[in-house]
Image (cartoon, rainbow, N blue to C red; front, side, top):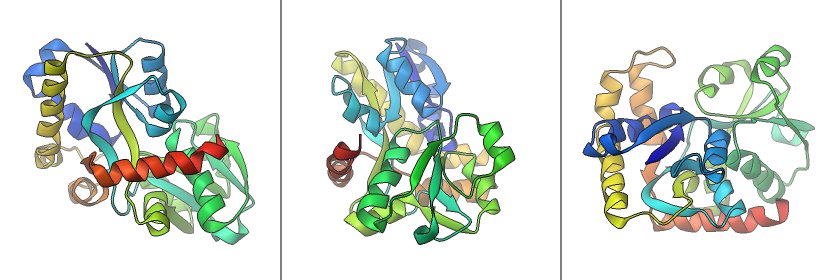
Length: 247
């Protein structure tokens, strides 16, 4: 079974669980950025993928198969609008090409929460972006840890969503493009559960190249919420409703 997951720190517990469970002998695991993970699944290059929830809305043939997700019930820390000026002065926002859900979330928040109408532009090359450093940008994933130091105003999109809706937000879910045997799905879920219940092992062995072990522990225990529960499903459905006119 070919599986694609996301190559960010927030997905390491899933990777750890899959690599340290009996299921590992039955799978081929590859790491991608979110947009590429979607492409692999839609083109049937993989059987299961951790993909942005926006892709599930756009491709209803995809099925969510897991009890776990990448979600947030407070600040998520790695999905940020960063700017040199306050919200009301932002004229244009550059969008992370790796993302699907976050670029739609910022449009929902701008329209319904902040009541602003900036121009949106896509970042085509991250190296070019680093050289030009636009006034306002939405970035996701590990690169936000260092980039945020270069901006005056930081807006956490998950936290803003929760202020607006009183619901958690879901960024990514595990999905498939086919009918899978139920015993395999059960084993897959157990492997993911093993990973998220052993995040302290991941922290202990982390090399501190990007952030400190304490920052990583805080990230896993406070920023990311992995259970795909009823409140997160409600939040996801509301996001789909608000996002629909903007697609």
